[in-house]
Image (cartoon, rainbow, N blue to C red; front, side, top):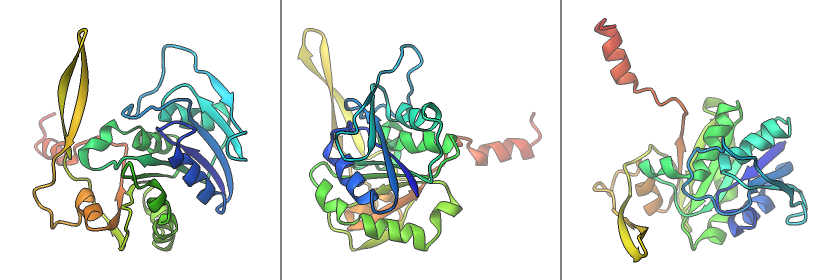
Length: 242
């Protein structure tokens, strides 16, 4: 199996080190990851300036490159720039959960959207900031569930969130936004954005991604690139309004 690994915390982050060490047992690993942290960059790509790519194979004992751009561009370089196909793209493991509507900002998840756009199967993996090593202990459990249930042949991309204690695995749906933000003045016309957690109202609906994680379940949510609102599309189409 040929595997491409990226992340949004930077090529030297602990999360990617843990993911690479685990993925080596699955097959041939290539790393193409951001030179510096790219959290919150979503599915963005660089269209204005040239992108620096450096060989960093010294880091993990496998072929590795740092890209001075976003996770999506890392995937693009790994596939388009290197002119390769991969059996699986892995993104993470992110030092922060990627749940609900907040995933629209996630560079970790943006990478798998780009992989899908380039006809590759991909998994985004995330956990809480201080539980990276604990979550890594559950990689086998999450991946076995995906393989045993043939999930990647049903849908090409999934968003996975792993709690530090994982009593099981749950197929979930995307919930609402779990963070609210405020702008804090820090002087000299500068503002810092500070987020705070806003729990879901229904803490018992474990089909919601964040609720499942809070119940010590690995959340696996099928994703797609198509942003069409089909209920509206079909209603308009059936009403013959065009």
